[in-house]
Length: 137
Image (cartoon, rainbow, N blue to C red; front, top):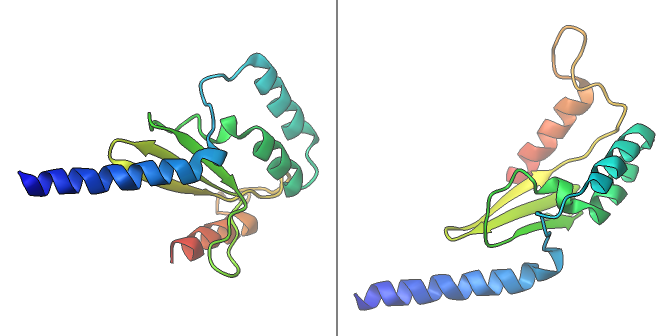
């Protein structure tokens, strides 16, 4: 029984520490409005380059966490460094009672074709998939 108390205390410590370190990246996900949707529609129509999307989503990261379910917090970190040369568009996380789950988000050109006319992954999609494999490695 004493061992279980120690494990619970260690788990609580790591949970509290992570929550404190992630606090600047907390996203309040429940307050999406019609204005948010209109702003997203506008940026999707007007974006010329990937950086236009990056800038918008950095200021409106509520769109990045809608699909997450962690009830103890959802977080979005723009352009974090993963080692010396790997920089995804975002790392997003959901915190729940079982811990933190992380997801990488790679943005691309708003004009890129995801698939060829024959249904095969396009060059930029293949490149993005390789980037995700590199992050995981």
